[in-house]
Image 1 (cartoon, rainbow, N blue to C red):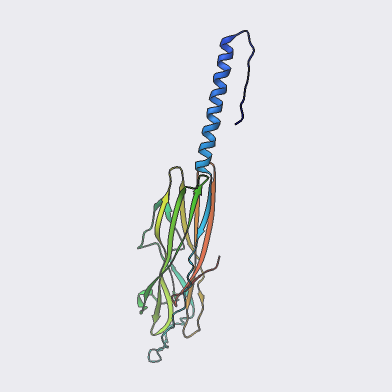
Image 2: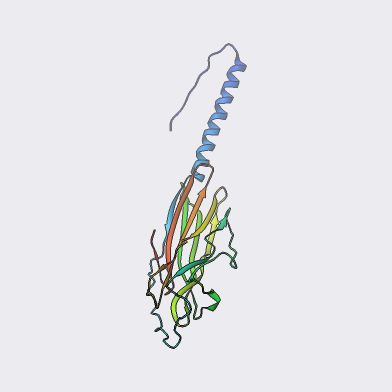
Length: 231
């Protein structure tokens, strides 16, 4: 232990008293700041799934229902391209509107059949303060509806986005998270049997009074019900 001894020699005792009081207040402030810093300084660890999704085989092309009216290998994005799904530590998802899709150009998604729902995760982040206490615990899953077919052809996507599994933030921590979707879907199949693919990026921002943290994860979801982390 370090002992600090400061002596004020003065002919004015009141002045000495004031100086000692100021020193005492200063030391209390330093100790309080150090304690607060240990609460609001933090480290972050990402959470990623260890399992891998295997593409599900597509049904054979239905030759009895040839596509004659549109070229379904031209795939476009529908729905929204960006939205916030965590705002100031609270979920902020509107399931009816906060989604994206990849469908044939000129075809309404309501004309597609054979859909099935898919999720992958958990993804997320957790933070600890300098005392080792968990101060942020945030987990989410990627979700999408896949294997949509048009007249027996292709594998297209709707309802692509995220769902929150858990969100916890200690007092003094603020968490915000956003989704952004690629504007140009890709075709991972053939011209006759296209497999749509969409890139979905999730970004997170964690803030305290003394530190800010930003990170993002991008996952490719596909119409054959598979997905992979690409960034």
